[in-house]
Length: 143
Image (tube, rainbow, N blue to C red; front, side):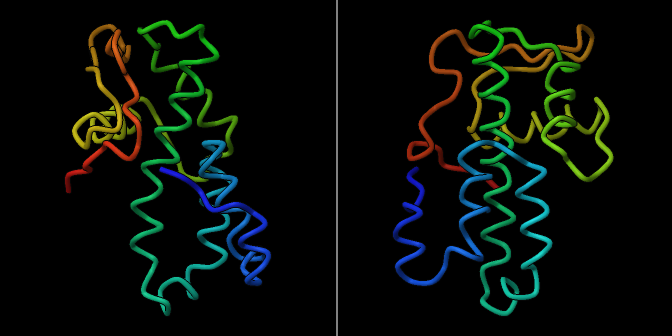
């Protein structure tokens, strides 16, 4: 996937509403994304785009997990506690524990955003050694 250039948003007077959301998606900053989404919920509901933004939240989470993977030296086994810490550092607003994280990661795997599996017993996410994060334009998210 590709994000719109900030200059394009600015040229059409959309930067005040969308620039922070776009940056949050690009950076995997789930906290900033949630705050901006909450701020403009009414507008997005009126525009009929709210559900699109809600679905995009999965992309933000995938980007965050990809960032953790990169920071950990592209090691294919990630401890859930490490990903949970990243969520907290990113300022996620809701209460998130390991069980909820496992659910979110399972959803990302099921939807094709991440290739791998979870080991509940070992509390790790095991990523595919080949292409663990498929390009977004090749992901066909399931519902």
